[in-house]
Image (tube, rainbow, N blue to C red):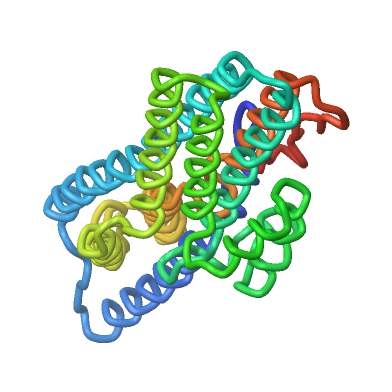
Amino acid sequence: MYTKRNYGFWQTFNWSKMPFIYGAIYAGIVLFVYYWLKKSYEIDISLPWQPISVLGIAVAFYLGFKNNASYDRTWEARKIWGGIVNNSRTFGVAVTAFIQGSKKEEIQKRIIYRHIAWMTALRYQLRLSREWEHQEERIKGIYFPEATDKYFDNLDGELCQLLAKEELEDCMGKANIAVQILKHQANDLQALRDQNYFDDFRHMEFHKLIGTFYDDQGRSERIKNFPFPRQYASVALWQALIFSVLIPFGMLNVFADAKECSHLLVVLFSALVIWVFFLMEKIGDYSENPFEGSYNDIPITAISKGIEIDLRQMIDDENIPAPLKSENGFLM
Protein backbone atom coordinates (compact mmCIF):
# COMPACT_ATOMS: atom_id res chain seq x y z
CA MET A 1 0.00 0.00 0.00
CA TYR A 2 1.27 3.47 -0.89
CA THR A 3 1.44 5.57 2.29
CA LYS A 4 2.41 9.06 1.13
CA ARG A 5 -0.24 11.73 0.63
CA ASN A 6 -0.24 11.62 -3.18
CA TYR A 7 1.45 9.87 -6.03
CA GLY A 8 3.62 12.42 -7.82
CA PHE A 9 2.58 13.39 -11.34
CA TRP A 10 5.72 11.97 -12.94
CA GLN A 11 5.42 8.87 -10.79
CA THR A 12 1.88 8.42 -12.08
CA PHE A 13 2.85 9.19 -15.64
CA ASN A 14 5.81 6.80 -15.58
CA TRP A 15 3.49 4.04 -14.37
CA SER A 16 1.02 4.67 -17.21
CA LYS A 17 3.12 6.26 -19.95
CA MET A 18 2.80 3.57 -22.62
CA PRO A 19 -0.77 4.52 -23.73
CA PHE A 20 0.42 8.13 -24.13
CA ILE A 21 3.44 7.07 -26.20
CA TYR A 22 1.48 4.64 -28.38
CA GLY A 23 -1.32 7.20 -28.74
CA ALA A 24 1.13 9.87 -29.92
CA ILE A 25 2.72 7.51 -32.46
CA TYR A 26 -0.66 6.38 -33.76
CA ALA A 27 -2.00 9.96 -33.99
CA GLY A 28 1.16 10.98 -35.84
CA ILE A 29 0.61 8.23 -38.41
CA VAL A 30 -3.03 9.26 -38.84
CA LEU A 31 -1.98 12.88 -39.31
CA PHE A 32 0.59 11.92 -41.95
CA VAL A 33 -1.94 9.80 -43.86
CA TYR A 34 -4.48 12.63 -43.61
CA TYR A 35 -2.08 15.14 -45.23
CA TRP A 36 -1.00 12.66 -47.90
CA LEU A 37 -4.56 11.69 -48.91
CA LYS A 38 -5.79 15.27 -48.85
CA LYS A 39 -2.97 16.65 -51.01
CA SER A 40 -2.73 13.70 -53.39
CA TYR A 41 -6.36 12.66 -53.78
CA GLU A 42 -8.34 15.39 -51.96
CA ILE A 43 -9.76 12.75 -49.62
CA ASP A 44 -10.71 13.92 -46.13
CA ILE A 45 -10.55 11.14 -43.53
CA SER A 46 -11.49 13.33 -40.55
CA LEU A 47 -14.65 12.42 -38.62
CA PRO A 48 -17.15 14.67 -36.82
CA TRP A 49 -16.21 14.98 -33.17
CA GLN A 50 -19.79 14.87 -31.83
CA PRO A 51 -20.47 11.11 -32.31
CA ILE A 52 -16.99 10.29 -31.04
CA SER A 53 -17.60 12.37 -27.92
CA VAL A 54 -20.87 10.52 -27.29
CA LEU A 55 -18.95 7.25 -27.48
CA GLY A 56 -16.38 8.70 -25.09
CA ILE A 57 -19.11 9.54 -22.57
CA ALA A 58 -20.37 5.96 -22.74
CA VAL A 59 -16.86 4.59 -22.23
CA ALA A 60 -16.29 6.94 -19.29
CA PHE A 61 -19.51 5.76 -17.62
CA TYR A 62 -18.51 2.14 -18.09
CA LEU A 63 -15.01 2.75 -16.74
CA GLY A 64 -16.59 4.46 -13.75
CA PHE A 65 -18.73 1.37 -13.11
CA LYS A 66 -15.70 -0.89 -13.38
CA ASN A 67 -13.62 1.27 -11.05
CA ASN A 68 -16.40 1.37 -8.45
CA ALA A 69 -16.74 -2.41 -8.55
CA SER A 70 -12.96 -2.83 -8.30
CA TYR A 71 -12.77 -0.43 -5.37
CA ASP A 72 -15.51 -2.39 -3.61
CA ARG A 73 -13.27 -5.46 -3.72
CA THR A 74 -10.38 -3.53 -2.18
CA TRP A 75 -12.55 -1.94 0.49
CA GLU A 76 -14.19 -5.26 1.36
CA ALA A 77 -10.74 -6.81 1.79
CA ARG A 78 -9.77 -3.97 4.14
CA LYS A 79 -12.94 -4.47 6.17
CA ILE A 80 -12.27 -8.20 6.44
CA TRP A 81 -8.81 -7.57 7.84
CA GLY A 82 -10.19 -4.90 10.12
CA GLY A 83 -12.47 -7.61 11.47
CA ILE A 84 -9.48 -9.91 11.95
CA VAL A 85 -7.82 -7.17 14.01
CA ASN A 86 -10.85 -6.76 16.27
CA ASN A 87 -11.56 -10.48 16.64
CA SER A 88 -7.90 -11.25 17.34
CA ARG A 89 -7.78 -8.73 20.16
CA THR A 90 -10.98 -10.17 21.59
CA PHE A 91 -9.48 -13.64 21.33
CA GLY A 92 -6.30 -12.51 23.08
CA VAL A 93 -8.24 -10.95 25.95
CA ALA A 94 -10.34 -14.12 26.27
CA VAL A 95 -7.21 -16.29 26.41
CA THR A 96 -5.63 -14.21 29.18
CA ALA A 97 -8.89 -13.90 31.16
CA PHE A 98 -10.54 -17.31 30.69
CA ILE A 99 -7.63 -19.75 30.94
CA GLN A 100 -6.67 -20.34 34.57
CA GLY A 101 -4.71 -23.04 36.35
CA SER A 102 -1.23 -24.03 37.35
CA LYS A 103 0.21 -23.86 33.81
CA LYS A 104 -1.80 -20.91 32.54
CA GLU A 105 1.22 -18.89 31.34
CA GLU A 106 2.52 -21.77 29.24
CA ILE A 107 -0.93 -22.55 27.84
CA GLN A 108 -1.75 -18.92 27.08
CA LYS A 109 1.53 -18.54 25.20
CA ARG A 110 0.85 -21.68 23.16
CA ILE A 111 -2.64 -20.55 22.20
CA ILE A 112 -1.52 -17.00 21.32
CA TYR A 113 1.43 -18.27 19.28
CA ARG A 114 -0.83 -20.61 17.36
CA HIS A 115 -3.13 -17.74 16.49
CA ILE A 116 -0.15 -15.73 15.22
CA ALA A 117 0.81 -18.78 13.17
CA TRP A 118 -2.68 -18.83 11.63
CA MET A 119 -2.39 -15.18 10.56
CA THR A 120 1.08 -15.84 9.16
CA ALA A 121 -0.09 -18.83 7.12
CA LEU A 122 -3.14 -16.96 5.86
CA ARG A 123 -1.20 -13.93 4.62
CA TYR A 124 1.31 -16.18 2.89
CA GLN A 125 -1.50 -18.05 1.15
CA LEU A 126 -3.12 -14.79 0.07
CA ARG A 127 0.18 -13.64 -1.47
CA LEU A 128 0.44 -16.66 -3.78
CA SER A 129 0.11 -15.56 -7.40
CA ARG A 130 -2.97 -16.22 -9.48
CA GLU A 131 -3.18 -16.38 -13.26
CA TRP A 132 -5.20 -13.17 -13.60
CA GLU A 133 -3.01 -11.06 -11.29
CA HIS A 134 -0.15 -8.71 -12.25
CA GLN A 135 2.59 -11.18 -11.41
CA GLU A 136 5.29 -9.25 -13.25
CA GLU A 137 4.67 -6.11 -11.16
CA ARG A 138 4.82 -7.59 -7.68
CA ILE A 139 7.22 -5.67 -5.44
CA LYS A 140 10.27 -7.92 -5.63
CA GLY A 141 12.12 -8.53 -2.39
CA ILE A 142 9.25 -7.22 -0.27
CA TYR A 143 6.17 -9.20 -1.19
CA PHE A 144 6.60 -12.92 -1.36
CA PRO A 145 6.28 -15.75 -2.07
CA GLU A 146 6.90 -15.56 -5.80
CA ALA A 147 6.73 -19.32 -6.32
CA THR A 148 5.43 -22.34 -4.47
CA ASP A 149 8.85 -23.59 -3.36
CA LYS A 150 9.77 -20.21 -1.86
CA TYR A 151 6.32 -20.11 -0.27
CA PHE A 152 6.94 -23.33 1.66
CA ASP A 153 10.51 -22.41 2.58
CA ASN A 154 9.66 -18.96 3.94
CA LEU A 155 6.46 -20.06 5.64
CA ASP A 156 8.16 -22.99 7.35
CA GLY A 157 10.86 -20.63 8.61
CA GLU A 158 8.28 -18.46 10.38
CA LEU A 159 5.93 -21.16 11.61
CA CYS A 160 8.69 -23.24 13.20
CA GLN A 161 9.09 -20.45 15.76
CA LEU A 162 5.38 -20.52 16.62
CA LEU A 163 4.23 -24.15 16.49
CA ALA A 164 5.39 -27.42 17.98
CA LYS A 165 7.35 -29.59 15.56
CA GLU A 166 4.73 -32.37 15.33
CA GLU A 167 1.93 -29.89 14.81
CA LEU A 168 3.88 -28.02 12.15
CA GLU A 169 4.64 -31.22 10.24
CA ASP A 170 0.99 -32.20 10.29
CA CYS A 171 -0.17 -28.79 9.02
CA MET A 172 2.49 -28.43 6.29
CA GLY A 173 1.33 -31.64 4.67
CA LYS A 174 -2.17 -30.29 4.04
CA ALA A 175 -3.59 -28.24 1.16
CA ASN A 176 -4.77 -25.33 3.33
CA ILE A 177 -2.31 -24.79 6.16
CA ALA A 178 -4.24 -21.96 7.82
CA VAL A 179 -7.37 -24.12 8.08
CA GLN A 180 -5.39 -26.91 9.73
CA ILE A 181 -3.87 -24.52 12.28
CA LEU A 182 -7.35 -23.40 13.36
CA LYS A 183 -8.38 -27.06 13.60
CA HIS A 184 -5.49 -27.69 16.00
CA GLN A 185 -6.53 -24.59 17.91
CA ALA A 186 -10.07 -25.89 18.33
CA ASN A 187 -8.86 -29.34 19.40
CA ASP A 188 -6.47 -27.83 21.94
CA LEU A 189 -9.23 -25.67 23.43
CA GLN A 190 -11.46 -28.73 23.72
CA ALA A 191 -8.70 -30.61 25.52
CA LEU A 192 -8.24 -27.69 27.92
CA ARG A 193 -11.98 -27.66 28.60
CA ASP A 194 -11.83 -31.38 29.38
CA GLN A 195 -9.07 -30.58 31.88
CA ASN A 196 -11.28 -27.88 33.48
CA TYR A 197 -9.11 -24.91 32.60
CA PHE A 198 -12.36 -23.05 31.82
CA ASP A 199 -16.07 -23.82 31.92
CA ASP A 200 -18.55 -24.65 29.13
CA PHE A 201 -19.72 -21.06 28.70
CA ARG A 202 -16.17 -19.81 28.09
CA HIS A 203 -15.50 -22.75 25.79
CA MET A 204 -18.47 -21.75 23.64
CA GLU A 205 -17.13 -18.20 23.46
CA PHE A 206 -13.81 -19.56 22.24
CA HIS A 207 -15.61 -21.69 19.65
CA LYS A 208 -17.53 -18.65 18.37
CA LEU A 209 -14.26 -16.78 17.90
CA ILE A 210 -12.76 -19.71 16.00
CA GLY A 211 -15.85 -19.56 13.77
CA THR A 212 -15.30 -15.85 13.10
CA PHE A 213 -11.70 -16.57 12.06
CA TYR A 214 -12.91 -19.20 9.61
CA ASP A 215 -15.43 -16.67 8.28
CA ASP A 216 -12.73 -14.02 7.83
CA GLN A 217 -10.44 -16.48 6.10
CA GLY A 218 -13.23 -17.65 3.80
CA ARG A 219 -14.13 -14.09 2.81
CA SER A 220 -10.48 -13.30 2.09
CA GLU A 221 -10.14 -16.45 -0.02
CA ARG A 222 -13.30 -15.56 -1.93
CA ILE A 223 -11.73 -12.29 -3.09
CA LYS A 224 -8.37 -13.95 -3.75
CA ASN A 225 -9.64 -16.95 -5.69
CA PHE A 226 -12.53 -15.39 -7.61
CA PRO A 227 -11.32 -12.72 -10.03
CA PHE A 228 -13.22 -9.64 -11.05
CA PRO A 229 -15.52 -11.04 -13.80
CA ARG A 230 -13.49 -11.16 -16.98
CA GLN A 231 -16.39 -10.06 -19.18
CA TYR A 232 -16.58 -6.71 -17.38
CA ALA A 233 -12.82 -6.22 -17.38
CA SER A 234 -12.52 -7.18 -21.06
CA VAL A 235 -15.37 -4.97 -22.29
CA ALA A 236 -13.87 -1.94 -20.54
CA LEU A 237 -10.53 -2.56 -22.21
CA TRP A 238 -11.95 -3.02 -25.73
CA GLN A 239 -14.29 -0.05 -25.43
CA ALA A 240 -11.40 2.17 -24.45
CA LEU A 241 -9.35 0.80 -27.32
CA ILE A 242 -12.07 1.41 -29.95
CA PHE A 243 -12.62 4.92 -28.64
CA SER A 244 -8.87 5.57 -28.77
CA VAL A 245 -8.69 4.42 -32.39
CA LEU A 246 -11.29 7.05 -33.38
CA ILE A 247 -9.89 9.96 -31.37
CA PRO A 248 -7.27 11.20 -33.89
CA PHE A 249 -9.86 11.28 -36.68
CA GLY A 250 -12.12 13.42 -34.51
CA MET A 251 -9.24 15.69 -33.53
CA LEU A 252 -8.53 16.29 -37.23
CA ASN A 253 -12.06 17.65 -37.52
CA VAL A 254 -11.68 19.79 -34.39
CA PHE A 255 -8.50 21.41 -35.73
CA ALA A 256 -9.67 21.52 -39.38
CA ASP A 257 -9.69 25.31 -39.51
CA ALA A 258 -6.37 25.71 -37.75
CA LYS A 259 -3.10 26.53 -39.46
CA GLU A 260 -1.14 23.60 -40.77
CA CYS A 261 1.48 23.87 -38.04
CA SER A 262 -1.32 23.76 -35.46
CA HIS A 263 -2.34 20.34 -36.73
CA LEU A 264 0.46 19.01 -34.56
CA LEU A 265 -1.98 19.62 -31.71
CA VAL A 266 -3.87 16.62 -33.07
CA VAL A 267 -1.01 14.43 -31.91
CA LEU A 268 -0.73 16.06 -28.48
CA PHE A 269 -4.44 16.10 -27.61
CA SER A 270 -5.08 12.65 -29.05
CA ALA A 271 -2.28 11.19 -26.93
CA LEU A 272 -3.52 13.07 -23.86
CA VAL A 273 -7.13 11.88 -24.17
CA ILE A 274 -6.00 8.30 -24.86
CA TRP A 275 -3.74 8.44 -21.80
CA VAL A 276 -6.54 9.71 -19.54
CA PHE A 277 -8.95 6.94 -20.54
CA PHE A 278 -6.40 4.17 -20.27
CA LEU A 279 -5.23 5.59 -16.94
CA MET A 280 -8.79 5.21 -15.62
CA GLU A 281 -8.91 1.68 -17.01
CA LYS A 282 -5.57 0.79 -15.44
CA ILE A 283 -6.54 2.14 -12.01
CA GLY A 284 -9.58 -0.13 -11.99
CA ASP A 285 -7.49 -3.02 -13.24
CA TYR A 286 -5.00 -2.66 -10.37
CA SER A 287 -7.75 -2.37 -7.75
CA GLU A 288 -9.29 -5.74 -8.60
CA ASN A 289 -6.82 -7.89 -6.66
CA PRO A 290 -6.12 -6.45 -3.17
CA PHE A 291 -3.88 -9.36 -2.10
CA GLU A 292 -1.57 -9.68 -5.13
CA GLY A 293 1.44 -7.95 -3.57
CA SER A 294 1.62 -4.89 -5.81
CA TYR A 295 1.72 -1.18 -5.03
CA ASN A 296 -1.93 -0.63 -4.14
CA ASP A 297 -2.97 -3.73 -2.23
CA ILE A 298 -3.98 -4.25 1.41
CA PRO A 299 -0.94 -4.23 3.77
CA ILE A 300 -1.82 -7.53 5.44
CA THR A 301 1.77 -8.11 6.57
CA ALA A 302 1.79 -4.84 8.52
CA ILE A 303 -1.70 -5.54 9.89
CA SER A 304 -0.65 -9.03 11.00
CA LYS A 305 2.47 -7.63 12.65
CA GLY A 306 0.37 -5.09 14.55
CA ILE A 307 -1.92 -7.85 15.83
CA GLU A 308 1.09 -9.95 16.81
CA ILE A 309 2.50 -7.09 18.86
CA ASP A 310 -0.81 -6.60 20.70
CA LEU A 311 -1.18 -10.31 21.48
CA ARG A 312 2.40 -10.76 22.64
CA GLN A 313 2.08 -7.77 24.96
CA MET A 314 -1.10 -9.24 26.45
CA ILE A 315 0.90 -12.23 27.72
CA ASP A 316 3.97 -10.15 28.63
CA ASP A 317 6.04 -11.96 26.04
CA GLU A 318 9.70 -11.27 25.35
CA ASN A 319 11.35 -10.16 22.10
CA ILE A 320 8.27 -8.34 20.86
CA PRO A 321 8.84 -7.27 17.22
CA ALA A 322 8.70 -3.63 16.16
CA PRO A 323 5.85 -2.40 13.94
CA LEU A 324 6.54 -2.49 10.22
CA LYS A 325 7.40 0.84 8.65
CA SER A 326 6.91 1.89 5.07
CA GLU A 327 9.79 1.47 2.65
CA ASN A 328 10.05 4.19 -0.01
CA GLY A 329 6.43 5.06 0.65
CA PHE A 330 5.14 1.48 0.50
CA LEU A 331 3.76 -0.56 3.38
CA MET A 332 3.63 -4.28 2.84
